[in-house]
Amino acid sequence: MDILVCIKQVPDTAEIKIDPVTNTLIRAGVPSIVNPFDKNALEAAVQLKEAHGGSVTVISMGPPQAKVALKECLSVGADKAVLISDRLFGGSDTFATSYILASAIKKLGNFDLILCGKQAIDGDTGQIGPEIAEHLGITQVTFAAKIEVKDDTVIVNREHDQGYEVIETKFPVVCTVVKSINEPRYASIKSKMKSNRAVIDELTVADLPELDQTKIGLKGSPTRVKKSFTPPRKESGIRIQEETGRESAVKLYEILLAANLIKKVG
Image (cartoon, rainbow, N blue to C red; front, side, top):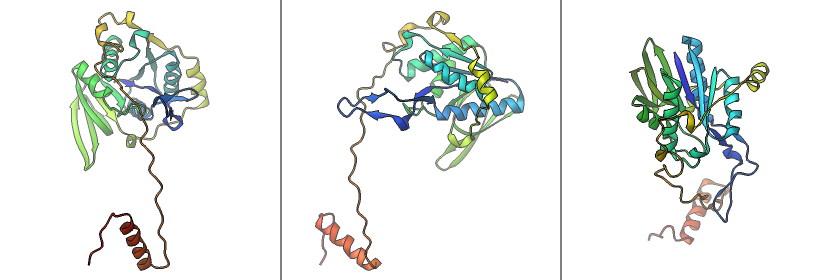
């Protein structure tokens, strides 16, 4: 079974700050990490490889420094890593990005299963996986919390608010996975050292001759980010803690009445 995993190197959102004047991200000094949901996708792929055999290829679209993220993926079980990188890809929105990734996937070969995290923590759109499936013209199953393979059939427990849907489909298929599917493994010192020596293959526009260049980059992107902003902070609440519950209720009533949030009856 040949499995491909799409991963993204993203800024660590715990470290991100917004410029209060320009409302843009302050990226200086912000560390980059592998998108957490993509780590779950990779772990799912490695577990399936261990159970059924085959290979796991990871791909990422980004600048040269994204090779660091790909090497991290190699250290936890991926067999091959490919970076899709070209200045002409800069400014691509999700539609253009998924088109480029789908073109690269076609170039790399036929895969039985393509896995993605359900979303990236920097954009939170959740669109790349489904759009790749549309570009490739294959089945998609989103929000996978469990993936099983029996012969040429994939059985997926699809998570939603009311529980799970159990969906069966044939290869090839694109699945996006949720956090609850597994706990990603840690790399060993030996695997880290080995991955650091690994050579990452790279694909550029020149390697994808069938790519329609009117559909990539900023010019090929139908959407634009007009503005980024942080919501205004609300004032802290107050704690009402009188000696008895009755006294606390009376105090709350007086505060709400004074703020004209309720009206006195009678």
